[in-house]
Length: 134
Image (cartoon, rainbow, N blue to C red; front, side, top):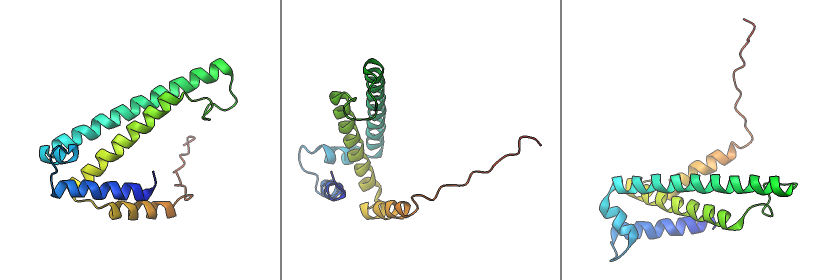
């Protein structure tokens, strides 16, 4: 999925907000309100965490069993668990877009912040050093 796909999905979500299509899950979320939307965001975040941890455990187990040189590579990941993680991330992104639309946060506003942050990539924060001898 590219950034245009995210923008297109956001536009569909905005459309569902203004014209509640019969049987639309998105329209249902808007009808139920902010508490339901936030609950779904929380659920999807929890499911994403669980999927990520499950994939990590499987990768470590595979690495330990096979002594694979690169435990992060796709060859060491179990594909069903990786697919599950990707699907949970997509569910989370969708629900975050619904939250944005509900609260009036435009996709362009978020993209602007992401662009600004991308310009700062490589600028590491300087951490304060503490003299432990004093």
